[in-house]
Amino acid sequence: MPDEQYKRNIAYKFRIGEVLMGKPIMDGERFSFLELGNKKIVRVNIIGNIIEKYESEGEKKYIFFTLDDGSGQIKLKSFGDDVNKFKNLMQGQTVLVIGVLRNFNNETYISPEIVREQNPKYLLIRKLETEKERSNSFQPMAKEQIIAVKDKILDIIKNAEKDGGIEMDVIIMNLREISPEIINQEIKRLLEEGIIFEPRPGKMRWLG
Image 1 (cartoon, rainbow, N blue to C red):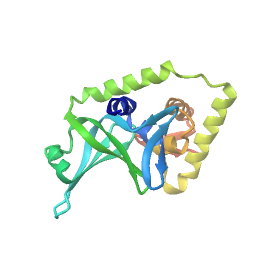
Image 2 (image 1 turned 120 degrees about the vertical axis):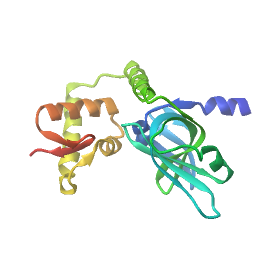
Image 3 (image 1 turned 90 degrees about the vertical axis):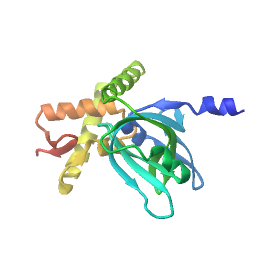
Image 4 (image 1 turned 30 degrees about the vertical axis):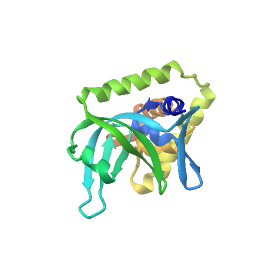
């Protein structure tokens, strides 16, 4: 039984933006798994840069990191005696993380099992790995579907003008039913057509 459980809970290789697109499935208040496409995900294998670190100073021991890989950001959270395993990790490091997904207060985060420093080039390698895997299972969309996707993206960007624009990962999260590749492709077209602009990397605004 333990072997079967371990095999079922394979650590899937993802980028952070993909994890954020998943739907947390709860059993009451307890997190069961993340639903993403036809996968039920419990454990993940992520590569990213540590952009924030916070360690508690009181009796309650915990340590939080914010991880960014260019597609989104996710928290690593460790508590109790496990904190000692991750004390030496620092902001600015590129790391490979294998851990269990958790969800609390509508936030999906990772409870890390293994964290190892990596050469920053592995961020690009992981991006290429996941893009290749998705392109192998990619189903082309009809022209009418593409136009509908483009309209949805444009509506989201227009509606965000009152807030000064919208982040790319937020668009992806709002359109969970559409693959990130299609969204990226249509945003690129909208930028090329001059319908939207990018005031800074990853943020979109309407030019209307």
